[in-house]
Image (tube, rainbow, N blue to C red):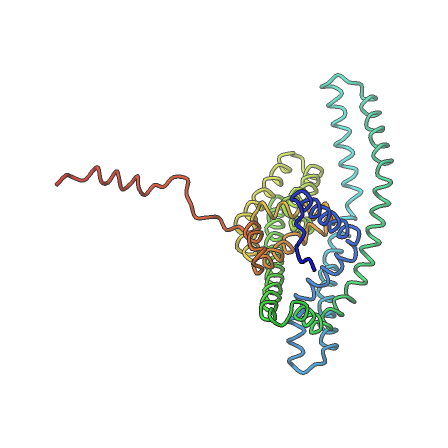
Amino acid sequence: MNNDKVSLPLYAKITLILIGLIAFVGILYIAKSIILLLIFAIIIAVVLHPVVNYFVNFGLNRIIAIVIVLLITFVVIGLFATLMLSQISRFSESWPLLVDKFTEIINETIIWASRYFDISTKKIIGWIAETKAEVINSSGTAIGNTLISVGSLLALVLILPVYIFLILYYQPILLEFFHRLFGADNRTEVGIIIGQIKTLIQRYLVGLSIEVLIVATLFSVGLLALGIEYAIILGVIGALLNLIPYLGAIMGAVLPMVIAIITKPSPWTALLVLILFIVVQFIDNNYIVPKVVASQVKISILVSLTAVLAFGVLWGIPGMFIAIPLTGIMKLIFDHVDNLKPWGFLLGDTMPKSSIINIKPIIEKIIGKGKPKA
């Protein structure tokens, strides 16, 4: 019997790897609804798991403990949603007035442009009407897609608690499955990895919640100081959008700037709003995130930015939210597998200790030259 192994050429190996990656990414994209549902359910279940164990340790039945924890969670979310809706309803009551002021600003801008560029007012109005019609026509499909997305989101909200309950209930079976999957010899190592993943997710989400609270406070206080209406709701929206790394802060600054332009006589207020968001973003990136959030996920800025963009293309905005913790989990797993440790090092933020110029020998030479000869 011939036991010789068939050795494939390099180009064949690369081709197989690329085909495998394309197939894997295709599966992730096609099944994104199910995968995202499971990921969010697992993340929330990991966060709620210590609370469930706390009630179980008091002698409560596991099912009753899970139901109590889910009810408490929904009550907290409901109170927050009620506060947000009250602010949004107040904002919507003044929306017609804001639209009228914005229309007035547009009319004044048209008159100024017609005088400055010597263009007929009718031509400018006609161009605006054509552009408006094109936007309305092109946005029809977008509105339809948005309604479909909203419907999918509502279905997700209804199904998500069921998945969270089942994951919390079957947690012992799931853990035992992973232990048996990797064999008895690796039981201790698998337990360590699962424990570290749970700790990473819990600490990351706690840090993220603290970051949202701090950033929302800074935005709201700053907007109140500038006299911007609806400062609290705008501050909260800005903090939530800020969760989208590198892109959310830009989107969060647009609405307060527009409201500042509409409600304030001077355009400088909008510039001050922009400066406020830039300053808060600087504080967040350089002090809050490194100390509160990023210290829990040891990945480099290059990798985190690439992950956010890649998961955004793959799964949209939900993918951008979970890109960093998923990448952190990948790095954690890579660090525990010998063949994958180089990839874990590549994802990390540990820079080799080296300097471009070694100053120590230069200083020693200078000091040596300055000493008197014996």
